[in-house]
Length: 227
Image 1 (cartoon, rainbow, N blue to C red):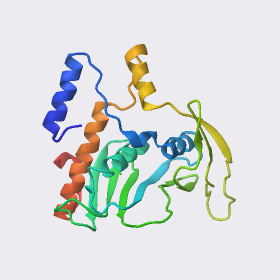
Image 2: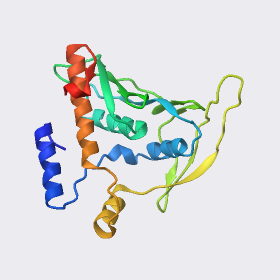
Image 3: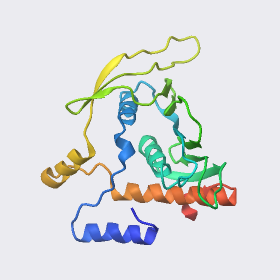
């Protein structure tokens, strides 16, 4: 969105004063696996989510450690946990001075939820794209394996573990509504719909990323009030 808080705040203020729409395409919110995973949470199959991890692996050895995939992982955490982040702890296994390599960031939220954003550079193979633990169930969510047609996702929901001694919950194949980003933007411009990604949300993503960098370099937890 912008390189610093001052410019970001100026953009938001300018948009409000001129009655313009300001948004950011947080593209990973529209990953089919993320849409379907959120549907399972919304339907209550996991209960109150306590821990959520967004994980990606691959050939990221030369990419910026947070301002590449990182901001998308953080945005997913903020979207799922739905609360104000209080504290960020980040550890980098790469070179934080050059801002590359593997890392993970743990975010504690005011509502008691914990989010983990993890990027494992250079590790091939299959892995759960998301791990979600709630008070009713838990699930390891794979990368996308379904289809999209006529603004609807069709996929096989992975088994939901319901605790020791209980059978897994198998929801089978489900059809889930899918609203593309640009359809939402059109509806916002033409029909006064609510914008899907609010500028304040984009501002918070970068604040958390900056706190993660500060945490990694200082080797300590950072309160969001210190950013």
